[in-house]
Image 1 (spheres, rainbow, N blue to C red):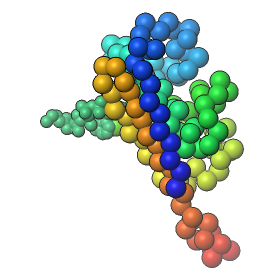
Image 2: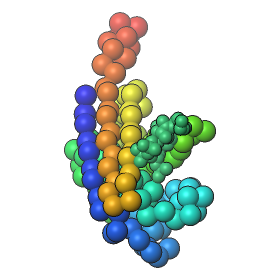
Image 3: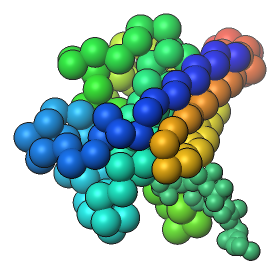
Length: 130
Ligand SMILES: CC(C)(COP(=O)(O)OP(=O)(O)OC[C@H]1O[C@@H](n2cnc3c(N)ncnc32)[C@H](O)[C@@H]1OP(=O)(O)O)[C@@H](O)C(=O)NCCC(=O)NCCS
């Protein structure tokens, strides 16, 4: 199991201009912010979710990897990750892992946790199928 957590002051994300946003977030993520009236706590929470994933992975967030991970929301509003193929190619176990993210916000602070549960049995199954 791999675990990552991140916490941010929301005020760092107040009135962030589009150029800066698009260096950190995809068009789909920015569309979600627009639906949420650009609430800075939502933006901060999604940044935390990215940071939490890369902490869990052990690489940390970098300008090169930040746009290769999207935080999307399903019908219920619950967040989940969507990975660029580069990330899946670099960390192949992710394709078979169970990956969970949870975000919580106040007006001042956002926090997110990420858990990556590696599915070792898949390897065993594959080996026994050889
Ligand atoms: C959605 C819910 C989990 C949010 O909890 P909260 O304490 O109000 O708010 P938090 O700041 O802790 O969490 C907000 C974040 O949770 C995430 N979230 C939203 N819906 C979610 C869901 N169904 N499951 C998990 N996470 C959810 C989002 O990332 C959200 O951030 P965003 O709105 O900025 O995108 C909570 O309201 C809930 O359980 N709702 C379902 C039941 C319901 O709607 N009850 C209405 C009152 S009876």
